[in-house]
Amino acid sequence: MGKLLVKNKDLVVPGEVLVEGMDYVPGSGVFREGEMIVANSVGLVSVDNRLVKLIPLTGFYAPKKNDTVIGKVANINFNGWMIDIGHSNFAMLSLKEATNEYIDKKADLSKYYDFGDVVVAKIISTTKDGTSDLTMKGPGLNKLVNGRVIEVASTKVPRIIGKQGSMITIIKTKTNCKVVVGQNGKVWIQSENPEEERKAIDIIRFIEKESVKEGLTEKVEKLLK
Amino acid sequence: MSYTKRNDGRKFDETREIKAEVGVIKNADGSAKFQIGKTIAIAAVYGPRNLYPKFLQNPEKGMLRCNYNMLSFSVDERIRPGPSRRSKEISLVTERALSPAVDLSTFTNAVVDVFVEIIQADAGTRCAGICAASMALADAGIPMRDLVAAVSVGKVGDKLVVDLNKLEEDYEGGATDVPIAVLPRNGEISLLQMDGEMEVKEIKEALEIGKKACEKIAEIQRKALKEKYKGD
Image (cartoon, rainbow over all chains, first blue to last red; front, side, top):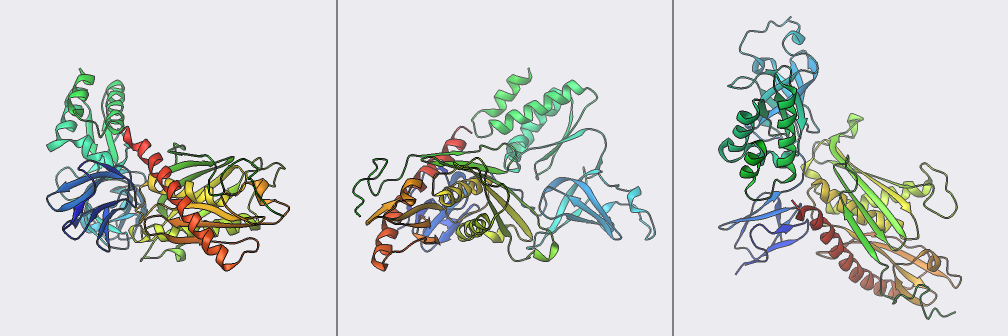
């Protein structure tokens, strides 16, 4: 009979044994060793029926399929753009996936996206060696002009977006800013009024700091009143 | 010559006072400070980041790159700053002590840099460095099989002791220093060096008391890590 050694929402560190026995299934952030399930990073335990996993509190961004990310054009090749998405490897945005318009083979690619341009793109595939491919065909996927990009921990992104986007909607409506959140922890903010931009950044930093506390949405609403 | 009492009044299997703190360097992805007695090590972790020159990249696993450095004011007489033969060796053994604990397959083609700086030295610096580095790696969120705890054991005169200080290392009746690093969950040893002479039987015994000390150190490491994230 398997034995659960921790409770839901317990804080654990690498090497801590969570489960003894084969009755539970390891999810993300944990691994099986012999008959035990062990944590591999700092996080909060989440037990869902027989699935044991960790909600990470720290860590780097690993690209996943269908993630919407914000990146910067780092290099231009003959067949596309290399985008820095905050991962150790650049992601590839190929000619075919870049725009809906026709791009001539001889065209100067920097006319479309130049070095340093910030783009919103979606990951269509990742490989085990760390490279990933992007697409910019789809709603909301475009070049971002003006505004600024701030970086937050990618583990906090779900809290900034909130349940069904509740948190991000509050920020957008209360501060009158345009906000785009990338799964890679990059947040683009733009507003006519620098004061409002400042306010939005402060709120995002606040969420990042208090991310695990309960009732965050209410707190943010109070702050923005 | 018989070594009947330790010069700082500790028991023979007692470590010096340990303090650990996580998140001491704001700009690093992960960082930690580890103090054992008068020895203080700070570690900073950066990455995973791009690895150049490109031929070093490995599509199957990432690379862990450690750098140990002793600051010029860390010892009684100023040491020349910069890399030395000794620091190069310790960088290498630190890397090898940490590698078994780190899941390198999660950051292929990339490198994680670990910088260990000794800001105050009173023997056992490589062990303090490894302890700090393993906490810093966990703080950076690098997937790990276990934390790594390290301590030096040894023989001073005719007694087996744990965690030698500088005075004991320089004991005129002869001292042997055996730094060990342990993955505490399953007791795997990832670092074992010896400076001096010891009998096989003594080494076996020393390892046992070293492992016990490492378990205590690991407990302090875990507590320090939880301390940082508890407030979240």
